[in-house]
Amino acid sequence: MSEQLREPSDEKPAHVIIESPELLKHGQHVRQAGEDIAIGETALLAGARLDAASLGLLASLGYAEVAVRQHQG
Image (tube, rainbow, N blue to C red; front, top):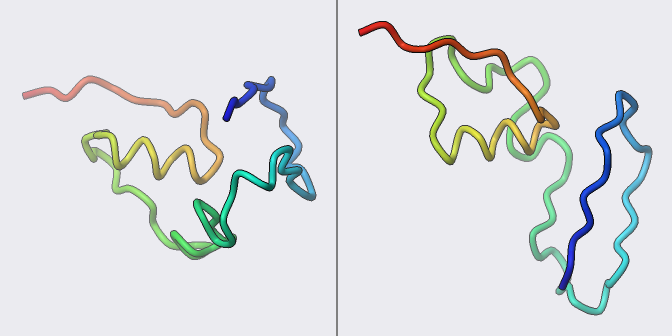
């Protein structure tokens, strides 16, 4: 299975096109909007260390870039 990177857009698409549906089983790697976190809920606290799980959460929320600062201590 191959994936193609696309340029980020400020507009969120209204739908997603699965180009090779035969490679997916029903529900495999598919999450519904709000399944990870609800609107208005805090995703990460200020000062949180960004580990792999945190970066995955940010990506799932549509963030390709976030402002960070080096921890003093």
